[in-house]
Length: 396
Image 1: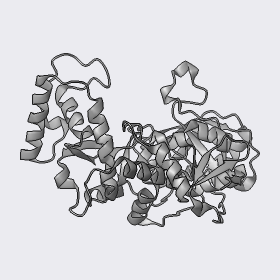
Image 2: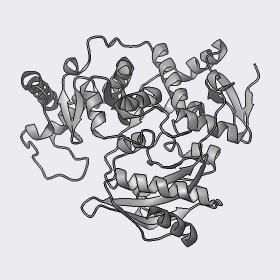
Image 3: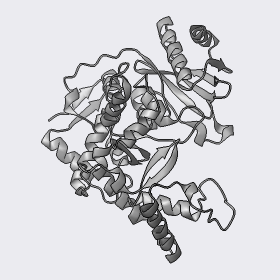
Image 4: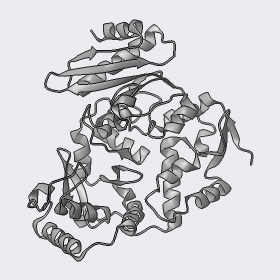
């Protein structure tokens, strides 16, 4: 079967539909919409950066405008979602739990040989959780023997808790973003399958989940989701699924092949609403830099990981999308005490913006400020005063 040939515009529509960004509120409203979103994407990336509202809350808000952050903790408490790793930490539907087991096995295989003292401490920590119930790091005595050398220099009890979490002996929930460690049997509902999947089952799960959230993908993006699993068979099963007709190869004009897509998009008519979105740097749409270049002609990099002298746009620059075009990026910080959202740099791309588009951007920034509990927006720097003024006028 010859690969389906798509135009870049057709590809962008499919990608945005898969990401839940083709129209406003695609999953409905309320707490149930949050679960539908996580169920659809299969994964919401979690991040601790609090310059503005954290990435997982931000990504949900972009698709569920009436979102309340407490809904995430409620879904977790109800046993409908859980936190663990795919390529990074994030939230997943609880019924996908068994597919986290190969990742846990992978973390265990990568673990360096532990000393007997480290093994004994892990046993002691696990025993306390078994006897006392859910515990946080602060519930353990400060057992550090030397001064901390940096952010990731954890004290021994914290390291023991994290090792037990990564190998599956413990799970975590969150309380005010702080980790609460508990036994899996206390958090996993009785009807959840906890058997280890075969390598083929795991590979097919990763492929299906990846394509459902990405829409169109290179093999390397699908493989990346299994990066903690040793000797996975993603590429072999990808070829098998193509043979079976469950997945089709596609070619996008101007891009390297092969690309992969679910056949459901062959005949699906997708119309973009033209909505404006202020997106998280860790949104599923933005995590692969090469995808943004290839499909959207948008060269984006989050610069909090870049040394300050080399930053071009700012520490925490948020991509701004209108329809299928990235039109700007805004380096923002929420001053929660002053209830003010400061945009240190509002940088517009080389794209002509119409009055309606500027109005939608203004509405998106206003909604984003309110989501961050900010009542005013301040722009300190911009490369287009005319566009910036039109947006600011729309905020009043």
